[in-house]
Length: 154
Image 1: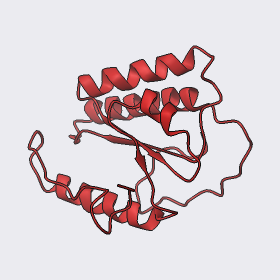
Image 2: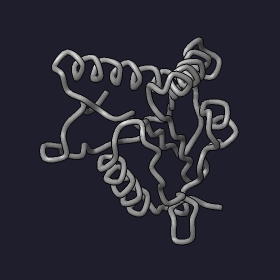
Image 3: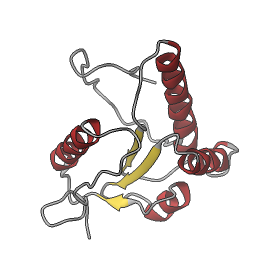
Image 4: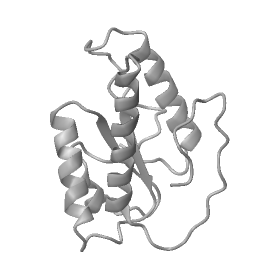
């Protein structure tokens, strides 16, 4: 882990470097463990929250598919989605292994158009604003990511 949870007003993006391996299953498990800890902290302090969204954005494929972590990550995502503990979104960039992302995610993975990260994060910000103005449990209509001028390929 490079950066713990931080509010937007104190977040400073870290400089990331490439190391070659992509232990995706292990990383998903770590991320979901951190999310569980954060939700527990909120509950212990009486802080309400909406259903968290977890985004996995990758330009490759997992290097840990032959380890116990890969099937555990798949099972944790499936269980989390079924119990509405979180919503998991897989996004492939450039040469991402979309077939492995399909194994991991309960919903269809999306492919980023080119390198339109700005459009993705603007959509995410707008979507979260819409959700935050709603009542927990309400259904909120969001602009589909693959709509015209969206960030995902059709």
